[in-house]
Length: 111
Length: 114
Image (cartoon, each protein chain N blue to C red):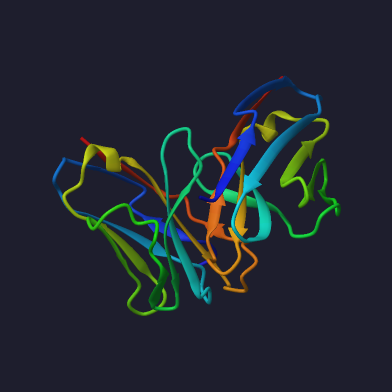
């Protein structure tokens, strides 16, 4: 069974801290790994990763994939209260065209 | 439209009733997905359409759930004889169908079965 596991499930930090969110996966046929941010209802796309070792970066957010160890991390530096959200990791299964999501990490940034 | 539109945003119904949830994808997107998200969980795949046909319906939990996309655009998710366990947010997403996984999600329909 295809599985995506995120850790921690919940994280509370102070504004300005740096956080690292983890995502590990066990899937039959990997195509790509995606990160989404979910603030209220609609998840919004952050990154798509297909190759190992290549960091994707957008402002204070960055992500990297390790296809040998089957995991990805999402880093957020100099966190702001607006970063508070649920961060979802998902894996696209080759040929199946469906995303398998992890449970999400609920990140809370306190002022 | 500019984004994926879902209606209703909230639906409260009684156990045993029939409900329909509607999704209007981004114009030109050929792929459409339905996901279900329970409290504290990630979205769970239900069904995927490529054009008018259901390419993968392996996530539908049982035969009370059915979805259609008759003209390859708007889709309707239909739930018969609702049960309390069906309560969740039903998310619709669309993509251009290039197959790399970037889905654009709607705001979801929150279904509560009393």
